[in-house]
Length: 204
Image (cartoon, rainbow, N blue to C red; front, side, top):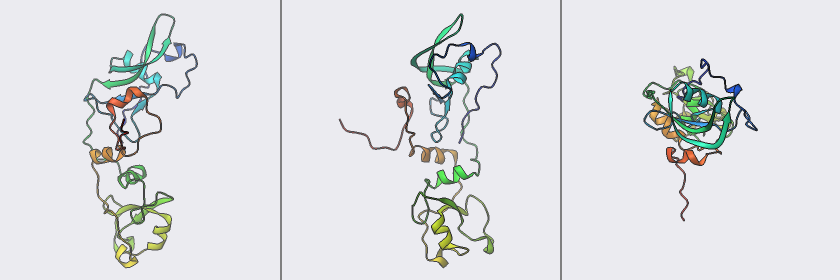
């Protein structure tokens, strides 16, 4: 998924100079929005550490949208920690997704295309390699180890198995849509206006 690289070097800015109080390295993560105020990535969620968020603010690369009720201080400066920032320069989301294990499992919803089990996922060549099947988006699907073993070097038809979905080459937008089905365990309240998850709304 597309997540902007963290800020590695910011001349004149050293977050180590700030008093961190009880802040740990994973405390107060900052949600990164694109210039259109959409998350750069849903799964994994596009986040920066508080240190990278502070650097980005000093480098004038982002607009601060919201903040935590936590302050960091240096000898001559203090600021509220950003909880949401928006990039000033738009990052295009129309490039082709990388053909990786994570993206493939995300495309298939982290479940076996034969039995829908989420356990012990592996790769399956839908058209087996002995029949010329390629290792590509359009021929590889997520399969649990049990179904993969059952299918062996046969086609789904030969093995008497049905595909719940055919393999396809996804776009970034399709992977983003899939990612919205998997909200993380922790969502800070300041992020909720910018995240749209496929979860049931609670009635009041």
